[in-house]
Length: 115
Image 1: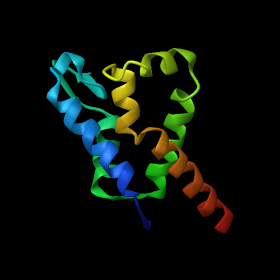
Image 2: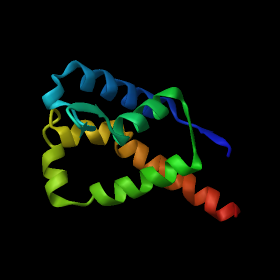
Image 3: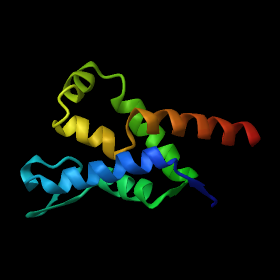
């Protein structure tokens, strides 16, 4: 499957979110889940690392589009994201933020048009 170059501004958003998230105590981190007795990185951290690497594939973009669809329009999520230090805001940035949402949507539209 071909890889698509992630725009530099999205790479920076994802990397800043990773750095900030990792600077927090484990209890305050976004995108971590409990597995048994320990907390491990969840899908959001994996996505951020892929974005920060500079290239992702179509499957990752489809996953991102679905995540944004679930979280973008929820009034509760929107309100929670207003606090830049909230888990919701950090998670949004880990997925590329609003810029990432627009880029993924546009890129997938172009891919689907070619098919």
